[in-house]
Amino acid sequence: MFQQNSNSMSSIIGPDLEINGDINIKGDLLIYGQVTGNINCDGLITTMKGSIVSGSIITNFADISGDVDGNVEAKNKVSLSSTSSLSGDLLASIIVIEEGAKFNGLCKMNSGSEETKPQNSKVANLNEGTKV
Image (cartoon, rainbow, N blue to C red; front, side, top):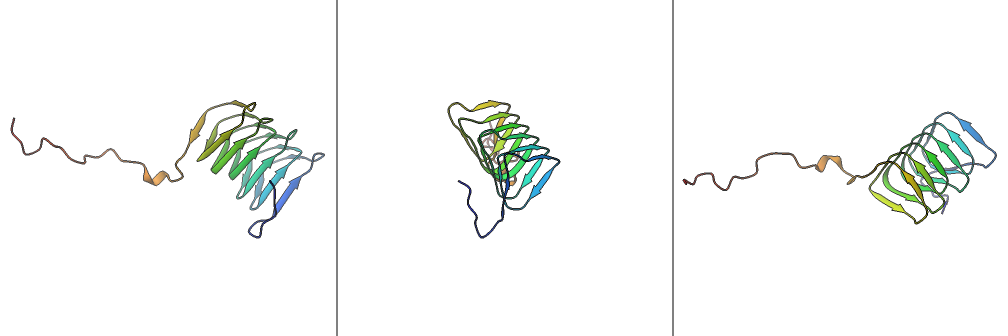
């Protein structure tokens, strides 16, 4: 679930810790306590059952088991466990919602690359050059 790897450092917000303010973190973040503010994480955010986040989350991966009141945007995958509660919009490439999860908001899946959107341009006209 939450492991130390060689590419990122892990930080833990304990159950008795309450943070008021934004968090910017390059590694993974495990939340047991309460955060009031936005979180910007380059790794994995894991919120445990009983944790509370009041603010938006921007991350690569999110594993939500607690309460989140704000938007969640992940470049890769978001998982909402059966104990999770999300009140806000959800944007990710991969979305997993377990039975029992509470989700109130809009859901949008991105393809991972916004540059590959097709443009409205004329490709071919099959009637060109023919007379009717």
